[in-house]
Image: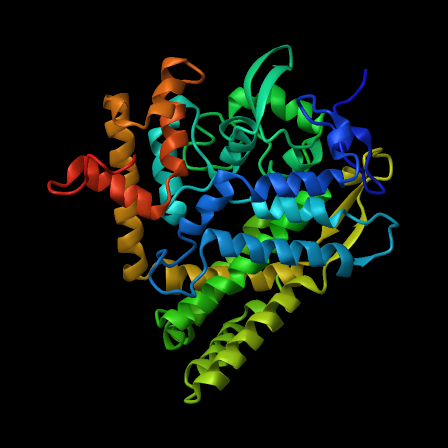
Length: 435
């Protein structure tokens, strides 16, 4: 049977990797690389553009240089692409940089507004309807919500809307948590794939439960970026108290060590000890207290670059399963425990000093409340929604609740504020205002 393959496949990849769910005329793309085509489709998608209006850590629009989900995704993509060419690798197989970059660019397109609290709130509302998660929403966006392809027959049934019609390899890279949603296991976790996409997941992955190497690279690029960038943004915003980091060094150290033990990661005391945490805080303090602003900016950027280097440079590409016929599963991206230790320290420090700061918590809480109230309002009366989503609901393309979650999760921070004001705040909203 002829596979739906367009574009030029890179070395090490097969028609199975490059296959798309729906047929396209191969002659239209015969001069382009197959994964470059996917990258273009992600960049030109509405979901990708909306990332410019979604909070990473600090509220969108607070200042002009803090990261949004869009700028974060661009930085992750740069790291991911760099890993493909710079990582130690004597296997003979090179992960395709376009494929990894595409996965990195798209890794957050399913994330709702207002950070992870927005995701948690929507998950609570959707517990009885299949759950909600930013990662499973990625797959839903590229397979259904985006409207580049009309769809057609797929997996033995009509598929109304083919999304972006991406390759199997790209779709596989977006599935970070292959296990299907089930209660009670997923009651407090968004680490799953929607159960309604079981057949799609199986078409993408075959019988495999592991993550392909490109997904592993994208995941570590993401982890490395936000481990460092969240601290950088918070320091520049003046909400990272490095003196408090020194005071909490013992607490941070103990929590990191407990998490490492829980996850089966070998502890490196030179990175996770109370002294090591205090030393990291002292580095940041020396930067924050510089009186020369240009020197302070240079030193902060130097710390960011050096720390990302510490997270990435010791990693390598190596053989995982010599009997595997698909290179995406034959090889893996190995991250040493020392790099994981550093990431744990940075993330735990960011959690205690940034995400738990009342100035962040209160705004996140307000945002989560807004998403919850919007969801409940639309659940009571779908006529409050835009016409396109009313059409989806009337056509029974999915359950009402799933389509409401699609709409609410797609909102930017600013759009959610405006829609909430239109529905609930007297004196706001206008007949001429587009919804």
